[in-house]
Image 1: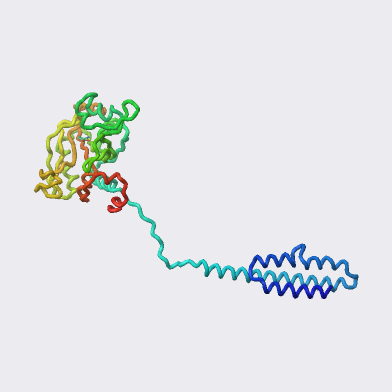
Image 2 (image 1 turned 30 degrees about the horizontal axis):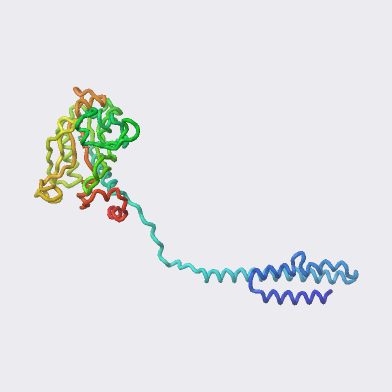
Amino acid sequence: MLDKLDALQQRASAALEALTDLAALEAWHAQYLSRRGELTQLLRSVGQLPPQERPGAGQRANELKTALEAAYERRQADLKRQARTQALTAERVDVTLPGRPPSLGRLHLSTQALRRIYAIFADMGFQVYRAPDVETDELNFELLNMPPHHPARDMWDTFYTTREGVLLRTHTSPGQIRAMRDYCPEPIRVILPGMCYRYEQVTARSEMMFHQVEGLAVGKHIAMTDLKGTMTEYAHRMFGEGRKMRFRSSHFPFTEPSVEVDMDCILCGGEGCRVCKYTGWLEIAGAGMVHPVVLRNGGYNPDVYSGFAFGMGVERPAMLSHSIDDIRYFFSNDVRFLEQFG
Ligand code: PHE
């Protein structure tokens, strides 16, 4: 029995030395130390030895078991360390390689222009009032003094929904009615920014959708001169202190009197160029004193209250400031365009 144990010890130790990976180590463990392993079998057979040999053989077998288990654990630790070192060299990561910077988003050019406009009007006491893009015929036209069949509707042809009387707004002016009905009888000083839609041929000069900012002031003793001062202050802050202003008489069904607000051309300074069509002037807004019918539709008594309103585009002035020659870039979502601003 003792000889068998010696022989087993030699074979097992030699095999343990020779093996080089963890799979082989597990096979080794199964062969010698598992429940069916050779050493376990020998241990079991101790019971069949003559009684006087049992203690010696038992002790020797147990010592061998402890020794082999310890050797197994040492070898396992060695092999694991080796495997890790190998993996570290084979799968080396170059931590000095510069990372790939995530691309940063930025505000759309229209949003940037809108925010400049908000800031200027905020300084003059105007709050932002939100009104929906999907409107009713009643608010987009009728309450703005354009009954059905009114010829002025042709200037604001739009997209209709399948719901009778529901359309995409052609201007931000219907928001005037909403704001008035909301605030009446308080005085009002709001701007209404947002998208407008028109059934129009899309060209380099005109899109079927664009932003407008509407302005509305209602109160007692509001006069044309307030409108002129507000527009002048806006143009000076948006386009430069020295800008010259011109208020040209015009017509809108919802204002009386109505004007077009012009400023001297920022490209030629009034000399006349292609952009201002050789007039020296650029139109920046439509405006006027709120029509008595519109005031009444908003809930205000036109004998007591008066007000002014204006509506201006957002993309066209941004085109001028950034020398953009085609309005279609704004909504074609080409990042090469969008990345140039901000
Ligand atoms: N709503 C007009 C347009 O879209 C502009 C405007 C607004 C004119 C307010 C007068 C007063 O052309």
